[in-house]
Image 1 (cartoon, rainbow, N blue to C red):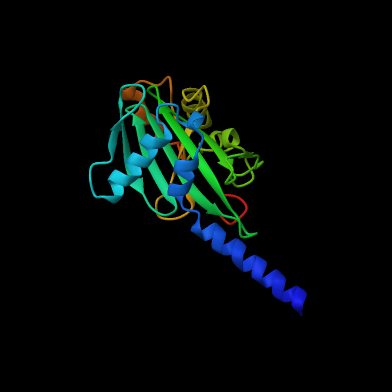
Image 2: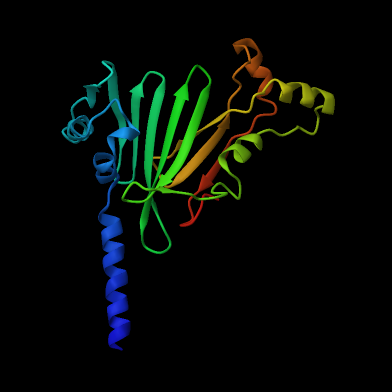
Length: 212
């Protein structure tokens, strides 16, 4: 009976600790190497400005402007520059712990993202096939489909326009989910409308172990 009580208390305190770890805590404790343009002091200043209802913008270490766009207990979105977005969300694990998902998206000009997972000590976690059984590249490659009314040759011509494979992702402020998009890096603006017929988007929700 005593052993059961101790186990219950341990589980309770783990859950309390995980829930107390906000995305702000993660942002401030993050190593400077993750966002070299912002020191810990500047990261804290952005949060303070947001919480005070003032414009959350600072001059970064690269002599540009960085803006905190969105901040909740579990999610944040930061415009590091006109061409770089940094997103983080807090993901509860089934074992009661918490990990952080980080998405960095660059526009040059086609969008491309990097997605990674970390524990609370900012050690990288390797979640294989984290996106509905696929890796990031596998998910991006799957974001095309041939409409029933389209000829196979036409579908192949349009698919060829999407090479090389490039994609981007965005997290949600309304719950632990991620949306994947396919980029068309070598396609002229006038031709992008043609690709809408075969391009897909896909939203996956976090289930405590993986995005599904």
